Image 1 (cartoon, protein in one colour):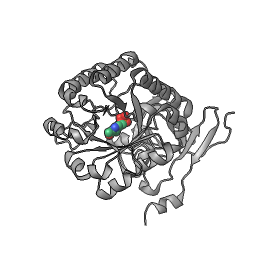
Image 2 (cartoon, protein in one colour):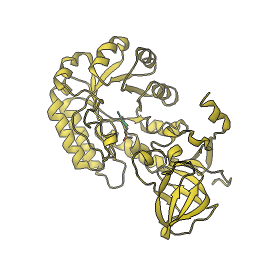
Image 3 (cartoon, helix red, strand yellow):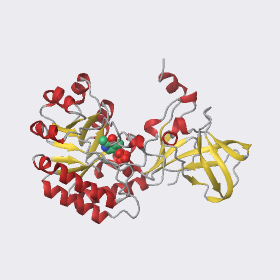
Image 4 (cartoon, helix red, strand yellow):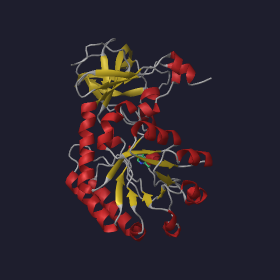
Length: 371
Ligand SMILES: *Cc1c(COP(=O)(O)O)cnc(C)c1O
């Protein structure tokens, strides 16, 4: 039954049917390729839909102690724990949640491998190449601190580890590029891989995108896994949730300064931060495209709090609902209380069409976030 309640904007709306489409692709890839997929929680941690996700994924991977705990408590299955820097206290906590601990450096490995004996241990490698449209998100950028560069030093510690993690892609929809780089990993690290049990190829491959050559992708993973005798892991974040949510907002005012500017009851800075960080424009799911030119902007006091410039089929007026697309990955995990703005609730459209409000926030959450 479709929900008839009118919900108070702003809210994030996750659509389980769309999520299921991506999840089924991921499951199929894993079955055909013999790979495993762990959800990157740093992209998406909204645990109300973990029940739907769990049968299709092999577990979670984390970037910090709280994410590892969330993975253990709310998702289950395999828990991979990575951090750019573990403290000894972190390690003593994380070892209760994790099955696999991945160190970012050989110094961290040497300091802590004794603390995690009995768990699977891996090291992150920086292969010196990557695919990313943004220097900010490029793990092989100059002076990158992400992963071990020295292949010789790596082979000296091979006895301490059972696997390696290469996270070298960001929104990569170019299969030929992925394939070439996988070859390079095989050439440069093949001897070491043969001595290990598993390899994680990280996240950032856009393989749930329409038109991605899935048959070839599966085949490449399968051949790689066979050739070096390793279990292949994928760590998808964005690929799991792409296209699965909207940020639903309402126009509060329309002002004019050379162009019409519609101000909505949400904010890039507070609710869709990555558009500011990467200087990208949001996609508008509704209203559809047309001839009415308008800038859609947020209601924070930041001058550059702008979702983008659009040509829409309707002239926007106060009260009009605007649905901002692609609001799942790297949105809810980054929301903040800048300006003391009301925080979008979180709603889920279930497979049967009903909409649950799984979280709403209020003033008490704002004051609880500071003291
Ligand atoms: C960010 C990240 C991921 C997930 O990346 P997506 O682009 O969201 O797929 C996976 N693994 C590591 C180590 C990461 O840092």
